[in-house]
Structure formats: structure tokens, C-alpha cells
Amino acid sequence: MPRLDRSVAVCLLVVFAGMSIVALGYQYEARLMPLVVGLPAIALTIAQLVKRPPAAPVRDRMASRAEIVALAWLAAFAALVALGGVVVGGAIAVALTQRAWLRESWRTALIGGASSAALLFFVFERQLGIALFQGLLMERFR
Amino acid sequence: MEPLVRSLTILGSDLSLWLLMLAAVPLGMLFGAIPGLGGKLGIVMSIPLVFGMDAVHGSVFLVAMHAVVHTGGSIPSILLGIPGTGPDAATVCDGYPMAQKGEAGRAIGASLAASAVGGVFGALFLAVLIPVVQPTVLAFGPAEFFALALLGITFIGSVSGRDLHKGLLVGAFGLMLSFIGSEAQTGVQRFSMGQPFLWDGVEVTIVMLAVFAVPEALALAGEGRVMQQPPDAGGYAMADLWEGIVDVARHWWLTLRTSFIGAVIGLVPGLGGDVASWVCYGHAVQSSKTPERFGHGAVEGVIGPEAANNSKEGGALLPTLFFGIPGSSGMAVMLGAFVILGIQPGPEMAREHLDLVWVLIWTLVVSNILAAAMFLAIGRWVVLAVHVRAGLLVPFVLLMTCTGVLLAASHWQNLGLLVGLAALGFGFKRCDWPRAPLAIGLVLGPVMELSLHQSLTIWGPGFLLRPIAGMLLLATLATVVLSVRYKGRIRATP
Image 1: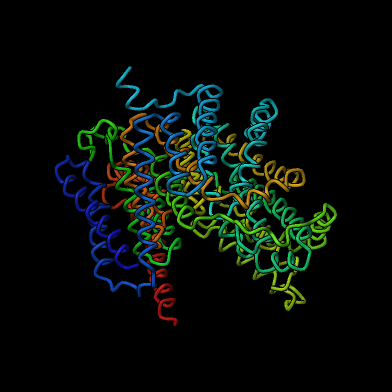
Image 2: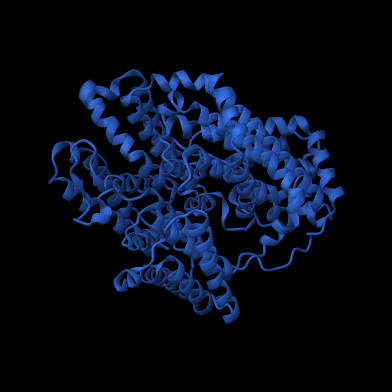
């Protein structure tokens, strides 16, 4: 998959170049190590991009689309947890992903969501005494 | 002797450590038994569970869980011909044919006993080497640690993927991530873009979860299954298991040899379980008087790789704990988890925390024996776990991931960081970029930076010419040259 391979390399190049440029503005002690790592990394990334990519394995478009969908679901999952908190938002996110993305039955999704919420609440909040994140919505209305 | 006695006192006086091992062992076997999960994911998924634990309890839980992953991983290899984890692939060669011949129980019994012997051997190997390694570690100064960290990243980068470039780049990315946040020498805020959630740097937990746990979960979801077909060769009786255990006693010399080879391979940073199990499978074939039986259900073909799989963990703990250089990709993740627990691998371990090292050695011994014993009691349920649907598993993995992120760093913005890094981690996985160097770079970054500043202050720019540091630097260059030549030859082979 040379296109994705190149995209990964470009992402890294942007990170290395951006951080190296920013590091130039720091004092000596703070910029030394980022530049010691960043500059050779930039050269290596450019070499990686210039290198002839390996022959692309035949992959259908559906697989790439499925991967984008998977990442979108991850983002949605994280957003639901951020908004509703780990217990409530997490339970909703589990139920939704099971039903809408992974095509489980409504019954399985509801049981999955409820059992996740129960597990998190009893294990973390009750047994371990850890206060879990309650979500941005709850924080706003409190 | 004092740390050894202290470790026994700790274990003898704290019942909760034993309970933690009892909880961790079946969990580790489950992670191994479900194809696609494995030990690395097991460690990162368990990180939320060890929050709030002290270093001893947390590390005992993680080491006990990780030590028995391959014991569980042999089950789908034998019953379904599908390895639970990468290093269990060698077990398929003879374990699955044995199951097809109706000898599944014998193969599982041999695998359990060989794994237990291998695991205990690995722990003893680590124990024997401590007196040898301790003075070496204490002789190391900042220059040597800088050179060693450089060697570690280069080594892992060169052996953990097909492309040296990619390994080095991922290692460099890990290092760059470790520079985010307040700089130790000057207190300057670096690369935090004024965002308070980055002031303390990027949490190792978040990177581990994003780069190891999430891509595996998304890949499982994409495949739509873990294992759905029923095991056609899953039936076995206790007497069959016992026959396999007796086989290990009958082939005791092979078991000890492959345990030793596995432990030595574990010592070499970056080689890991795949190499150990295949080398030992090859050794079992070569040393057999009837090599033609291999591939058709020879019990020695199960004993060799399984003993090596578990013994290598003892060997791999040595460079991980004393030098901060992980012996395998699983140990790279373990190294990150240790840091999260407040354990800083390196000379401090030899100086101050030798009792913890001994506790971990005992943990390896106990957990490997427990795994074999527990399988006899709960084996049927572990076998059932092989058939868990991705639809049930993946959302729970994602939820535990988000929980882990929010426990590691209370700022909700870290969830955004998780998504961004997970997308990159997914790209790494899809394009065959090794991910272990990222963990190592992230963990070694602060050590390298501190060592560099100290070395420059004490010796100036010529610090790399000191004898041991110079040798390590030469080893780094040799690693690069050999890796380029070896991989070039592989590419040239049609």
C-alpha cells in the first residue's frame, strides 16, 4: 500500500520538521536533543520518501473504506466518552458501536452497554475507589 | 543474599500479591488464547487495572500476566491451527497435526508442561545472571547509558521490521514525543503549544494504548471475527493431558536445551519470541533421530517452541530491568508500564531495587507453574474464549482504552491525542512499520537527554570515545551495517 506508506512518512516528516524548527527557538540545553534526533530523522524520512516504494499488494477499495470507517468510529467513541463520561458515555458508545458498526443485535448491544457501565462503576469507582471522568456535559451542568 | 531474603519476606507476608497472580494468570492465558490479542495488548489493556497499585503489586500483576500469554497462545495453535500469538506459530507445525490425529489433549499437555518448565528455567536463568550483570551495570556512567540507549533503539529498529529506515524513524518519533513538555535542565516548556494538557509531556500510557491496543482492536473489527468456526479437534480427556505431561518428562533433555536457547535469545534485545520459538523448533527437528515425523504430529515439535516461548521472558527481563533496553517488543511495552508504575529501569534497579527484581523472578516461577495447574481446572473455558466474537470484544477494548487514557492524564483533550496517535499507529500496522521502537524511544528519551547533558558537562564532546561507550557506538554502527546488508540480501532474493 504505497500511498498509505507515503502518507505515514509525510506525517512523520511534518512532525520532525515542525519540531526541529520550533526547537531552534529554544535555549541550547532545551534544543540540543530535539535537533540531534530531529535533523537526522528529517534526512532519513526524505530518503524513505525518495526510495522506490515496494510493489503494491492488490487491495480492494472496500478494505481502505472499512479502515476509514473504523477510525471514524474510534473518533466518535472518544467523543462520546469525552461528552458523557467514562461510565455513561462509555456505555452509550459501547452499545452504539456494537449495534451500528459491528452489526450485533439490539439485545447484545444493550447488554454490552449496561454490563460495561456496571463493570466500570463497580470495579473502578466502588472497589478501587478511583473517581472516573464524568464527562464535559456533566461538568457543564453541575 | 539480602535482597533474595527480602523478596521472600515480601511474598510471604503479602497475601494480596498471591491473589494478584491468581487473577493475572487466567487473564494472561485469555489474552494469549484469543487470536489477535496477545501479550503486548494484554499489558496495555491491564494498565488501567494497575492504577493506584504500588510498584511491587502493579509489576507482579503485569509480569505474571505477560509470562503466561504463550501458554494460552498454544491452545488455538493446537486446536485450530491458528496461532494465538506470533511466537506460537511454530507450535502449529506439529500441534495441529496432533489434534487432527485425535491427540489434542496430549499436545496441550505437552505444551503446558514444556511452557511451565521453560518459564521456571527462564526465571532461574535470570537469577543466575544477576551477580554477573550487577557489577557491569554499576560500572556504567552517563556516557555509556547514552551509547547503550542509542544501541537499543538502533537494534530494535533494525530487527523488529523488514526495513531499517522505518524502524529508526519510528524510534526517532518516539524520542521526539518524549521531548514534549517541561525540559528537566531549564524548565522550558517544549512543543506544548500553550496547551496545559501537554505541560507534563505525553503520557507513556496514552501512546501505548494508541499505538498498540487501538490498531489491534480496529483490525479485529475489520476482520469481523476472532474465531467463529467450532473446533473440530477440540475434544480431549484428562488422561490425554497427562500423557503430554509425561512426554515432557520423557524428553527432558530437549526441554532443558530449548529452554536454555530461548532464555539466551531473550537476552538479545529485539530478537523476541518468534526467533526463539522457530530456532528451537529447528533445533528439535535437527536433534531428532527421526526428523521425518516433524510436521506430521511429533510431540517434540510442540515441546521445543513452547519451552522457548516461556523461557525467553526470563532472559528478556534482564536487559529490560538493568539497562532499560527491552529484550523483546513485549518487553518494550512492559518497560513503558514499569515507568508508569514508578519503576525506572537501569542501574537504580541493581543498586536500590534488587528485592523487586527477585520478587519478579519468583513471580515468573509461580505464574508459570500456576498457569499449568490452572489450565487443568479452567481449560475448557479458556478454549471457549477462542471463539469470542469481535463484535463483543472490540467495543470493550476501546472503552478500556479511553478509561486508561483518562486515568493516566485527567485532561479530556488526551482523548483527541489518542485518536490522532491511533490513526498513525493504525497506519504503522497497515504499512508494516514496526511499533516497538516507538515505545522504546518514548521511554529512553528522557534518559538519553539527561545522559547526553551529563556526559557533555563531564567529558565534553569526546565522551563517546570512552572505552565502553566507544564499543557500544561501534556496535550501533555494526548493527546498522549488518542490518542494511542482511535486508538488502533478503530483498535481492526472488
